Length: 170
Length: 192
Image (cartoon, rainbow over the protein chains, first blue to last red):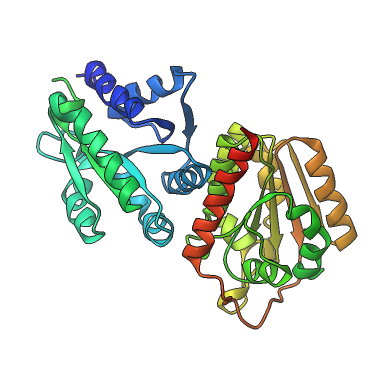
């Protein structure tokens, strides 16, 4: 039961096609291939974090410095980052492209992941963050491009939920 | 040492740098000495000024980036010390004004009041140059050395728990943010 290398590549290629030059990340089972791809890419700056909220600051710095960035994080990392999202990204009108691995949905086997799933979308709605689910590799490229476009034009956070069907091969 | 005196001592050098500050007294006092387009004041999201400075320094190695942090702020984001140390950008100087208190909310003591050592934690995190200073002349000299060293430095300045009567200034947050971004863009354009 591994994370999908093929679909991780589709996601990574879509980020590159959008001109993303910096990725911040904290390792997560579903994200391992994406992180390795960023690490192996000499054109990509990968910032490995101690805690996800740092990534909001790093993405803000990247935006102010003139670069596009993305955050790779688990939904529990999104929960951890809420203050930074509100009091930096929203307060200062910073575009944030968040790719959130959506643990704890139907099919989740790890008991410790099961609380985060149920609160992820309600919290995104409460924070008024536009989001889409990524489930089918066929729609990944255009949804990532569209999310990046909206983040840059609205100067606000936008989220993409990396779902089980896309990330995990049973 | 008063923080505003320390800032005054290095102000001429700060004008030549890209500066990211925390909220409260640091932001208000730097503005009282004179705002510059290369100064960005992060008026909330405590702890993230160092992360913003790290992001800028990684993407713009040609710029000299200075973060003006505080004890209360860095204590909220200690992991940032390990992230800075991991990538150790040579163009980043991380100054921490340590007044051992959360001054802007009434002066409650932080853990540095009971012995927690920020320079020690930065060194243990892997920041290559760290020091703690207690006098203005010593601070100015240490800052100058940090700029010349061309290596990531965390410089802790022990300051009095005193600040200006108000932290509000007439510079709006968004005006500051867009001016700062445009300034960084113009610097790049001039270079090309």
